[in-house]
Length: 365
Image 1 (cartoon, one colour):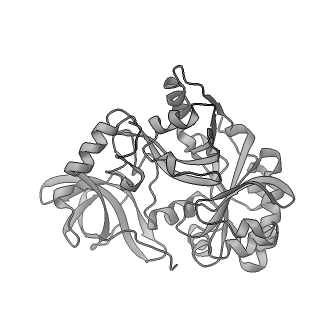
Image 2 (image 1 turned 90 degrees about the vertical axis):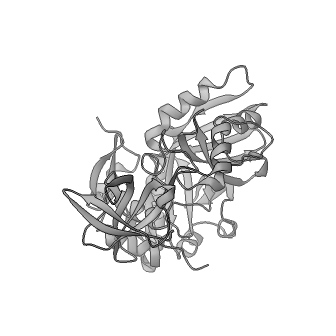
């Protein structure tokens, strides 16, 4: 039986097409992926991402506990700020990539990937040891809506007070009001656009969803599914766990080295391996590829230089913004020069591609 979010029954009203996504029945699209993608790039889109996991970590040792488990430096946080980070195994492979919200010192909310909830919570509990820290999986109590796009601030302003729209990127308001409901709102997202993520009680999700769509309708706001979420994050080179990051792909290989702070005071799990990778360079690198021949590079397709397989595609699609067939590929670093021609095996044919700069899309500031 597939899990469902509190908004599942709303999907039917919009005629959404649902798929099995990591054990969840979620909408892949409401209208069309291209239309939804375009709306987020030019106006705004509303996503139900309630399948994401939320874990509360608090107690006298919470800060030191998380410093030991996470690659980024939590000492950079202050109350009301969020930080993107990874959590690694001893061998440098990635347990997950996540957001950490500091409500106050020693009181944190971790937002983790849906497919990793059980694994992540087990990992945290395994390392709890004698620490004075409580770890609570609150995923079932919290629904999460993402309002994304250049008009997101104009739309949320209609149903909240001005303090929400004055939030800076990667900051949040713990006690905000949206559509007359108490929520946590952060200026974050996964699309490469401006936007807000709204954490609410599960029972308030349908009310807030409807209020946002009503307020945003005159401005072109439409509901969006996982299909557009994937093409949007891909163009902005935001990694997806299970593709750009896995237990076998380190944060440095997966292109998020900025979230690995080797020099922070606390030693963290995986530090030795990651420090070596940072100093000596990684043997593999995540690069952008653009097809020269006609064909779409898909996840796991092999990438060749001559007769040698040099890596594989992690994500690929026809970019709705660029109208080109592009991909991200993890390849041997020695082949990772811009402009270099490679071949992607698409079914039984090897088709020409070239290495190009990433991200494929960056919004104008």
